[in-house]
Length: 228
Image 1 (cartoon, rainbow, N blue to C red):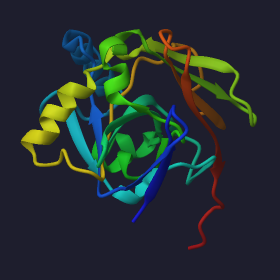
Image 2: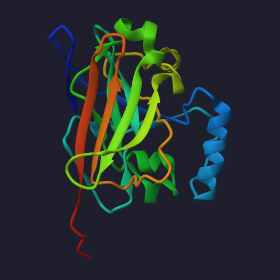
Image 3: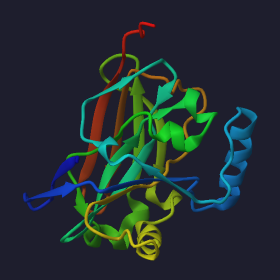
């Protein structure tokens, strides 16, 4: 069982043993734009969901706080997201990056989500402390070909995505609004022309009201070729 540890703004820490990991998909607040995105993906061979927004169960051990992600080939990439973490003391909000296998994605989105980890930040906010200004919180990602991400690839805000409270209602309906559940939000648009198949990723959530920010960063390492 994976245990995540988060530092909170007051200096305390919260430990969570992950029992359920869920990845939201096609979770933009403007569903007309979501449908246009689905049509674009279909041209690339990626099968569309039966309903939107979608929700994909992921192996709980894939919720990780790491600085390196190992992959099997060169066509994998991250996605800037937020993560909702249910604890005994209430829900936490942190930054996340859903590293996805793009080759496997054309065969099944759910399969691609289980091929690499969901990387989470090491710091978190209590959802109750930021709920009244969530839409102002920015969500950005940078990529790089070396160890340091230096090119902005995603630049949006939490206002582009369905809210944590929307997903809390879904979790409650399914009996999953319980300590140990982690839900990843779905992502925002990538900048056209920026190579997403990068060696390094950084994701940041910044709160203009408090001046605080949460971030994560990792490098992507390709494993050796298999024998046989």
